Length: 157
Image (tube, rainbow, N blue to C red; front, side, top):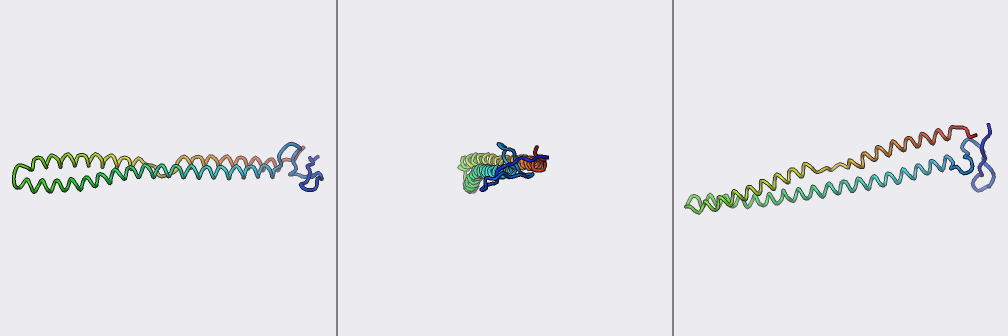
């Protein structure tokens, strides 16, 4: 069995052995370094994607929470109107106007509250895309490592 000769780094002398690559082809060490560099880049990109997904989730949660806060403030005003309506209703006919205002205000509060609750339920805080891509990347890296090991174990002709 003949082996290919490649120059050893720094000596200029040809190197022989099972890890030697034919001229023009990258060595196993170069292939493994390339895989490691690719893996590092992919992991960094996955982290950036996960950060972006969490940021988007937080933004939609903040919007829904602000709707709930507005609903709470309006509910307090509604409670004030309701109490004032009860007070006026005891003494005379002015209560009807205040009662109508109170009912309308509570309807607005109910609508804002329902919209806020629905939006809160719809928000996603888990980075699903990043998780799926990370699994896919891990599977591809395992295949590349398996291929590199096979290349290293195969005798060169």
